[in-house]
Picture 1 (cartoon, helix red, strand yellow):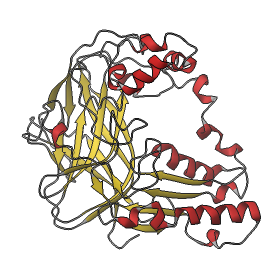
Picture 2 (picture 1 turned 90 degrees about the vertical axis):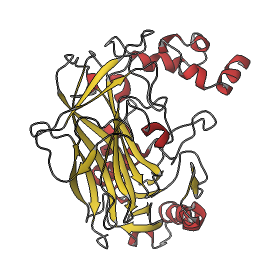
Picture 3 (picture 1 turned 120 degrees about the vertical axis):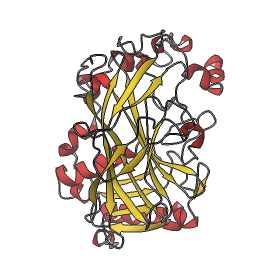
Length: 397
């Protein structure tokens, strides 16, 4: 037990250990028997479905007050559970579930400072009177007291960028419209020195972008939705320029915006890409770039090539062949002021937020060998890679 505590204090060391299935301190299955079970079930099989509440929303009988954060590692589940219970809850009460999302991390007391960004005093749970909302919620459902809560809109969301709360009739906001922003470049979108562009016009015939993904030197995690050891890997909002200086990170940015734009809702990347490896990962990150260059991360995601079609069973890829990948970045709510730029990062690692793909195609957790892979991202007429952004008209929500 003392050795385990010491290992937790040196978290970054064990995070990099390979193979994943042979962590020295976890060879004794009495310490964490579930760990080997997780490694043995990389597919979304019956093992996981037994624990998956999202497959059982229709069995839920009680309502839930879903509280999450834009930088919470469980944001995706928070949003899906709210939507699932509202749509399929088995009782009228369950379909009265509510949603609150602030600019918060996981396992915090809802402060205004997140990472290295101060979202203002109004962003605090105390300022929102989150405790009061919870008391009203329980008074209504447990004590049969009419607190007026159900007469209010079911969704409260904090809009980053303008740093204020908004009430909504639904999630995503009814006024939201998905807009495709396409990737463009002259074939050199690598790093801050590259020529990558992002815009609403579809690409014509453009050369693809290439980068070398080396899992021995992965792109380091810099903030985002993390849990649960901030001393080792701090979560939240951080300047991404140290990451964006790397040649294995492709950057696609809009010109400075002529007027403010709000993005609130789900974010998805459709990527046409190839790899020299039999399996690999592709990552994406949405970033708000200020006029001085400060690049604040908003949300991110990843896709493992072998699970591009379904997470229920692995499907190998053919090295060199272009496939379409859908990368789920969950969601955000952010106003980009005039003069800011919208940026999309594309790479193949975000470690240790996500485990490294060894690029070998072998069974999950068994690799001690790490192989580099040459990655290709296409953006042309037939393979128009793009990010679907949730645009809310100003004053429309």
